[in-house]
Image (tube, rainbow over all chains, first blue to last red; front, side, top):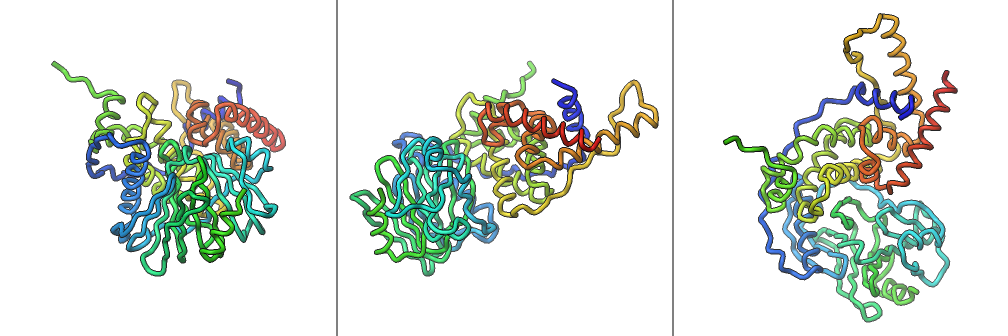
Length: 232
Length: 185
């Protein structure tokens, strides 16, 4: 350790941190599970448990799950009311070249039938192909390996939100159209980040082979399905 | 016969089975560093408290997925740091409070003279100021490695970086910090 490192280390002991608060550790006892389900079902069950936890954190947002839809890697829940969380934009991650994005995620990125304006990748393996101004995208096609994500969850308010089970290229998908979607990303370590969708329009989620794809934009169901079928 | 306190592994196993008291015993030794980690990221005491509390709750919920045999603290800190980063992003690039040093210097056998104390305080203030001028990436990696005294592996967990990246980023950040100090000097 050199002199500068030593000085920094000493400084660490001299920082005037705010006093550590008393945290509430009175968690409800979690019932032990009989883990006899198949892997996919385990992931699904864990996600539901996590979702319940997040709802429990939001006073006044305790809400029954009215309906649950599931495809590989994603779960969409219809709830009575959205959790009271701070609105924020989805973090697309770092803007990189296509080659760099593909190197990082380990698969060839899929495109709509036009050249994207930007490509982003997050450290957790979610790549986003963006069409239009990256600050105000017209369309976003996000893609991740289903195996990387156990899933991301969308909660939708009961009123005015449409959720349809659809088929894209013979594989299952979900079409969601509503004013607000609350998204939770869950990575392979079970870490969760809560984010609202970047676009307030429609979202189409579908599986293609090992990938989970998500198309967001101001689209009708017919337009979304047509675009999804064109993805190559 | 005196019963020994449960090991971390035993507490993890009990907590995985749903024992909330075991989980509380597991996280209590790490509350302070979890809060400080969140504070160094958010630079806001209230946000740090929220991030740490939510992180602890999420850790409780995610515990069935905790890899058996892995060290618990890096996993917990990574969840708290992730929550803190989300809050930081939500707040945009708003400046948080600047770090400051406590007024008291650590006591020792050889108490420094008033002049020595003044010099030490001045050098400490210069170092803090130089640290604050670094980019967020540089500042965070140095904060984790030296202010929080985390190892390279643990810093990688907290900042979602590979160990090699922690090493190279730390080296570059130290270089930039040294430049800042030389400019100031």
